Length: 173
Image (cartoon, rainbow, N blue to C red; front, side, top):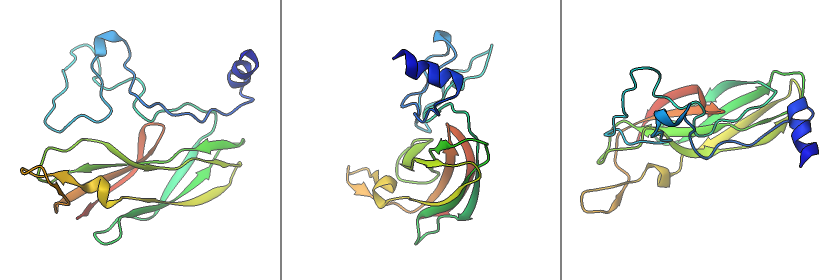
C-alpha cells in the first residue's frame, strides 16, 4: 500500500510495468488506438497532436537504456538481435518490445503489431544481448477465401522501449 507508493515516488523502487492500452491527453483526444489499420485515418485535431499522451507499451522509470543493433531480420532468418545497456547509475528493468507493420500483403494490415518482448533487470553499466523472434504466425494474413496465408511482401519492424521506437528496418517475406 502506502510504503510501496512512497518507495516509487522517492525512487527507492524501480517501476517495471508497461501500459496495455494507449492513454490520451484528455477526453477530447478520443479515440486512441494501439494498432489501427492502415485504412483507418484518425480524426485530425486542429488544436493539438493526434498521438496519445502515453502510447501502448509506455512505462515510466528512473533508468535509461541504450540499444544497439547486432543483426536485423532477413527473409530466411526473422529475428532481431540487439544489445541493451543500462546507462544510468542505478539498476533498472529493461522491457524491449518488437513491433511489425506489413507494407504489402493480401489485406489491410495493422500499423503497429506487437510480436515480441522481453523483461530483465540490468545493473548500472551492464549490457545484455537479446534475440526477439518474428514468428510465422505473426506474419499470417487472411486471404479473400478466409484462409490463413503467409503472403510475400515487405515488412517494417520497430524495436522500442516505453512506447518509443529506437531501432527499425525492413525485410521481405
